[in-house]
Length: 549
Image (cartoon, rainbow, N blue to C red; front, top):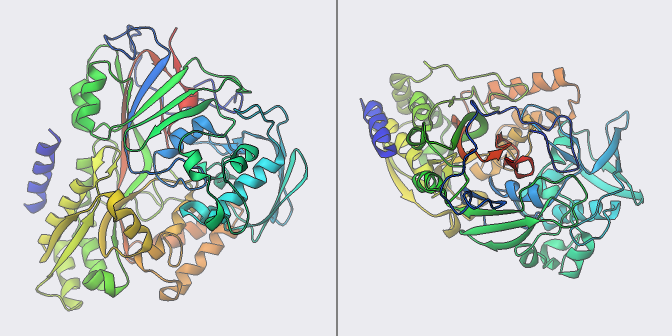
């Protein structure tokens, strides 16, 4: 049915109460099920035998579960269950709250953060958690120089004056620092265990740390669960941590199947072979409507799909021309992108998603103007259009294949004379490296928030983590690039909103990124479960789920 919907769109185009880190009074997610379901068991191995094992099907697109390297959409679901951070988001619309932290205080100049740790925390090994573990874990992430290391860029140094005090010295005020400390890559590891298996937090960790192989087979955290098995692109198994220091749920084991196909997820949920399907679409959700013992959730997320046009002419060719970029921006039919992504979709005004502090809301529905796009293309010297490859990978965005979004781009651009040739390349077979190395000329990709704060989006600015993937150097737009530091320094919310609005206006019509659609999440689950809810930081917070008694 999805293919039928896509064909139709293309035709038109062409014509909860328990939480990790002990408990939190604010831990219930704001995304509650729309209606109560029954709690009868379905005829399945996962639910009918009374087992306290829960089977979850989710998407793919990652190759490691070492916290120091994780930087994709789905690993935080696993990291959040096996590890804990100083701070955590207990709801989508809340602020970061202490988790392993007990109390904290910023200095008057916002250049120092002092964190006092909880004193009753143990790792799965039985080792006590101390400030040394916190410093080791965060310094390791920084010095590994992997994809998430930029999150540590404002950390100048870390002091540990005693076993339960951590002092962060920052290079500049960072208005998102507490939010950054919630991200999976800054989870606190059992330093004794990791060091015994080749880990180091030394400055040369990028070349001397050898713990990744070990951390791909098991976890070394203080979380509610321990990872006991990881078969890449197939399955992850989590089992209850016998030494968990906090209040645990009644789920003893999670089997996480890496099964991105929404139709497969729908069928296996219907037969009771899985308990939670995380990559549903409007079509597959419709198939489940009214089925006994199945509950569905439709809700907004901050996951956003975008078109990227490389500013380096060597890779981007004609799409490196700013006038061509403006023409493409005007040619795209954003309503079609919303249709293909389903109920709850929107198109953000610019790079800050709807729902974030400082967002300017949605792009106007009448923004598309094909005739104006043709004029811009002619002004750029391409009155007759041109041919170009659009490289796309095998990932999905909240259940929607990126190849489907690429088809919409192809159809829309044909109207202004741009002949798009879609080139498919698996993420693990070169696309991922090319994307991060900045050698893709023209692509469709998605962005899921690393940490739940609008500052995560300013990594799209020139010279920053995502900006450089599009060959966008600081010297290409120094005034816009300078707003990055202004946003970090603006610790007053009103001042930060003003800067974020200025950034959005600057990128509304210009730049190598076009934010085409903000996708909703469609999750379906067996009603024997309680606490299933959409989570921007973790996709699904396994530490909030219980089996109904």
